[in-house]
Image 1 (tube, rainbow, N blue to C red):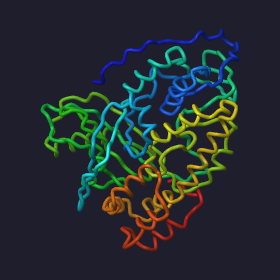
Image 2: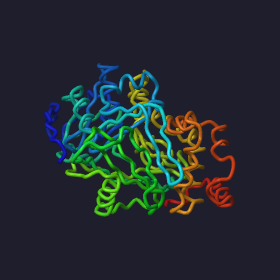
Image 3: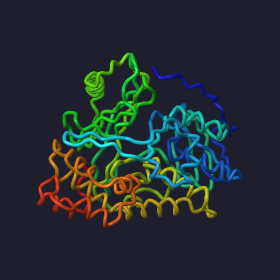
Length: 405
């Protein structure tokens, strides 16, 4: 069972139903990763900024585990997220049918229970839980109870919404934090164990050894479909543990995720598709272009809002510019994504990653930090590709959003 979370249900002094609050700089809609980090950073860097986080659930951050490599963040960024980190490891490993490797470099994880506890401790009365939003625009939010709030800027962080402007694949997973009957012999996180059967696209197990007797095990797929068969994946996790010689005695917590992997599209059209409301995190397409992970992007966005002298008035412009800049920098990644999804047969997609992990550690670090150079792209594509050449060329040349897998 998951350890209980005891909340102080602090709430701001809310206006009566139908009334207005006009003294806020920001209204953060959704208390997920990106909005919570932005509020946390604003509270630290600009204590005079007046904001409110509206979260429909009972905790900040939901039910997730976020991870990042040390190289994904700058030294300054790592310093301010340090209090949020739950686990750290000095190296990690990958496993493929014909190749295994231990890779140096710090790897860190943040568990949502710790995330909630530490951020809520700082924000307190500036968070309202149980706030189901019924209507919003660029400067106001109405909740289901009838209360209406106004602010200089509304920031919508309620997660990714598919758009006709983007062609997508998916990274989807079900993970369980499990207990074992005895200590297990696993010192390093396994970021990819692709020695499992390859079904529903590129499949791998992701394992984080939290303690000698607890670990997070996720059954993960780079798939054409967002559907998750939860009972089947629970069984696969148990079988994986058994094959490793680990006897599971309890499941503490379970989480699922469906992350977008963008193959092609038009980011301007993506933003023009809805009203001019500031968006953040996954809703603003601010995530790693291949993995879909959003923690480093959320950290950078939090700093952007905390350091910009022109916010909140320019929040929409700044967040849109950051999203469009990330899109331009992600062109190479989208080509690689298309090669993975469109050129490789689903059961053979693992060969693309198996070959990638033979490359220098410095290049792998830049890949995860979303800082690949054109020269890196040439290095990744050089030689005999692990997919048919003609299919690879066609996939790399496809640029329109017409395919939403």
